[in-house]
Image 1 (cartoon, rainbow, N blue to C red):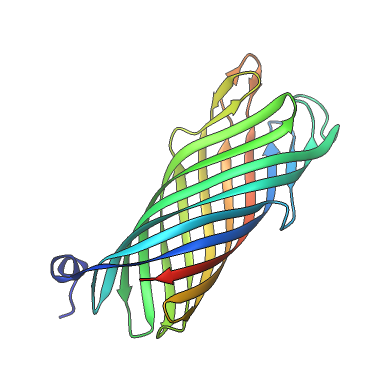
Image 2: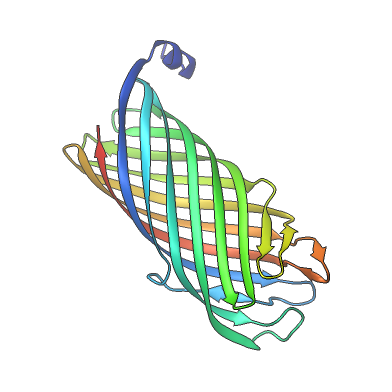
Length: 254
């Protein structure tokens, strides 16, 4: 009888092994606000290249045997750039304001993963996730919005690996924000958002050369923010953000 994950935990070989990598990325974003009685009040979008990012990641093998492994790791990527803005003052006519918004985004995550080998070249992986997101948007000299929240999530992946040459997978997952807020810096208003959920699909691939590897990941995500409370007549409307990210990785296994 094949060993279960519990037996892997009890009888697996403890390793001091892992990988570290640097990350260069770029985002294409389409942000759309919605308010009651109107299809939208503000839209922001950008093309690849106008919102670049740089970061790092690490992953460590904790336990392994012939049937799978358990790993832990994390990553952080910081993006800074701009988006094209179309909108209005709150309550105004859509399109009365057009310009460029600055954007600064920090995405960080920690994960604990369990990988099971289905055969010599195919694997199935599940991950538990936790992280923190910060998104600062400079709309004008009098309006800077800062979104912040910790989050928890999970994902699954099905992939294949050819010896130590090529690896690829298909991954899908979700993130759920805990106590998300949006601060209007200049007015010192902090709004409690009604909730934030994010669903994503990504395709990571790696090519190995000895202990080194190069990777590319294509990720598409849909984030939904529910409307906030009201402070002195102001509130943060509901919104949907669809983002596509392309990231390149250079890494080293040890």
